[in-house]
Amino acid sequence: MYYNEDTIIYVNGAFVKAAAANTGLYSQSLHYGYAVFEGIRAYPAGDSTRIFKAEEHFDRLRYSAGVMKIPFQYTTKKLTELSYEVLYRNGFTDAYLRPIVYCSANMSLSKGKEAMLAIQAWEWTNGYLSNKMRVMTSSYQRPNPAAFHINAKVSGHYVNSILACQEAKDNGFDEALLTDSHGYVAEGPGANVFMEKNGTLITPPPGNILQGITRATVIEICRTLQIPVEEMSFTPEEMRGADAAFFCGTAAEVVELASLDNVPFARPWTDTLSYQIQQAYKCRVLGKPFSSIDQTQPAYSSF
Image (cartoon, rainbow, N blue to C red; front, side, top):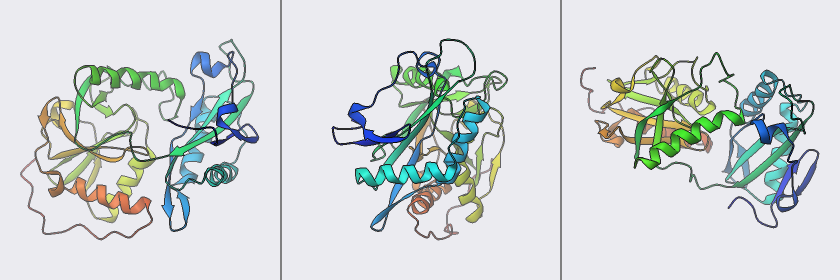
């Protein structure tokens, strides 16, 4: 699914075939989830390929390693160069990149003594999430920010995501929506969330979420298109029946939500500002211009 006998990846200083790569069974990362990673998209750009916001992603990878006290010396520039080389060696243009920093053998609960880097890539068709997702409020909450570095992208944190996502699927939904420890909406298992009410986009504030790079891009788009956007806390009850809502993330891009807890969102998707943002985001990642919001859209009902 992710590689074949010809796929090339980068592992700790060398370009090797994915089928021949291996890692140790005594790694801290395997036993304790003590690793950091990124998910990055590359898009076609004429006859070549372009990694979207490479600097932001690799800066965050280095930040994640730092706060987790994992020794890691690669620069953002070098990480970018290696990633383009992986894409080139595989002939990929529309692809997903997964750099991961993992640790050597160590069975103690102490900081990493040695770190390795792997950069993998595979062709992408945006199969992670699809539009019109039916979402349920999960019984699982996001980790307490006093217990984890939640603004770091740490492998072990995603056990929480697996539990929430599988709970939703077991209950007949497509995906989960997680709250924070205070009961406010936080994010999806692997994506940030926005809701639309009365012509304003609203997203949970920093503090209990991973502040995604796609989330930041959506806020940039809102400001460019003069769409009001606010970072504020809200509950699942306040979100149910909103005008529209969407998940956003590197893999997901901008994904329409059809309902929350079987309560449909009120407006037809193509009549919403959220739809306009979805289209603008597609243009942004492909390096294409996008026009301003159509000012003839119907007025919104009161909040």
